[in-house]
Image 1 (cartoon, rainbow, N blue to C red):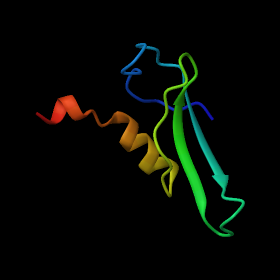
Image 2 (image 1 turned 90 degrees about the vertical axis):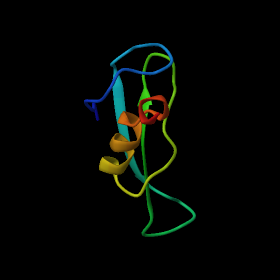
Image 3 (image 1 turned 30 degrees about the horizontal axis):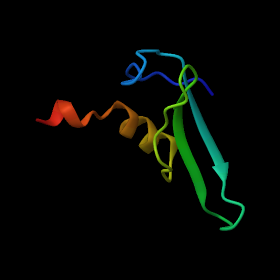
Image 4 (image 1 turned 90 degrees about the horizontal axis):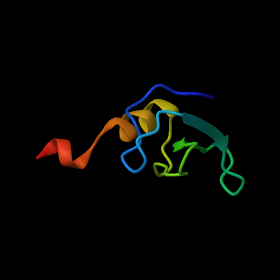
Length: 64
């Protein structure tokens, strides 16, 4: 699904996709992440898509 989020920190694109899928090896556990459709940069896996979007929108350089 398309998600709204900050531009990609690597290529500047805003074409982002959110993924929410079951882990094949761990029944009942889901994996969710956000990926840039332009360059392929992505977050790690999170329990919810909302957590993955929040991680995508958090920039380490902004915390300084």
